[in-house]
Image (tube, rainbow, N blue to C red; front, side, top):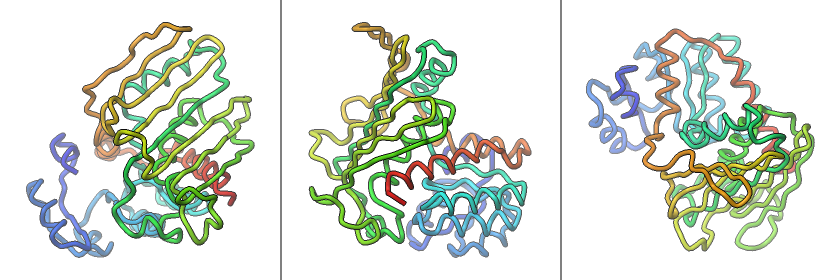
Length: 311
């Protein structure tokens, strides 16, 4: 919100949150914003052009559809929805309303991943045959709804892994997913039912149509020896590239191209990537952009997660 406001791309006119204290605190960060009830109708009454949704995951689809059907563009926190079917409903609503829809898959906007994607799409790494993804968080979520499958849609995979699965498919040009296998755990034991529990550790393999294999491990509350372990490595017939966090940071990343045992740095901190996804959406909205068909690929990401969950 602050990044959108400070860039001057849009005016923040209304803020709503079930916590009145949180809404008031947020309103103090920008000038001219009214604190309104958190229901959608209260925002519509403000005659807004766009709505940013940062509610529990189970609410995203219905809230996004309701806004889009009222002619309001939407920027939604990830995941856009809990399943591919729900995701399709939101995309269909955006197309029918011809309104801009975007999701906060923020790692796409890091300098390092943009450099790696350029290497891949230009063919400089040759044919990509393997991708290794990792996101371990030494902490767990701090809100109870994350642990309710009906509200969250899943555990660490849909919370953390979605970023990396999206990064892999986005970098590879969204090849069709042909198969996926996984093992999901809760407190060190195999998950008995995705309907009754959420996973706090997962390992998965996703195979795509060009023959590449994507391996994912992610977790909450892992004794990793640091706050977080985050990385995406791409291996091709002509070289490799890796994106990884620095010293356990959630915010500082480095990216490098690999040739055998040599390493060429592509990007290092600092990189002010936080908020870039939201600012990009606001900029495009201000420029008059409407439905963008590239949002269709979010259904591909959701379908890959459905396969990981065995849905």
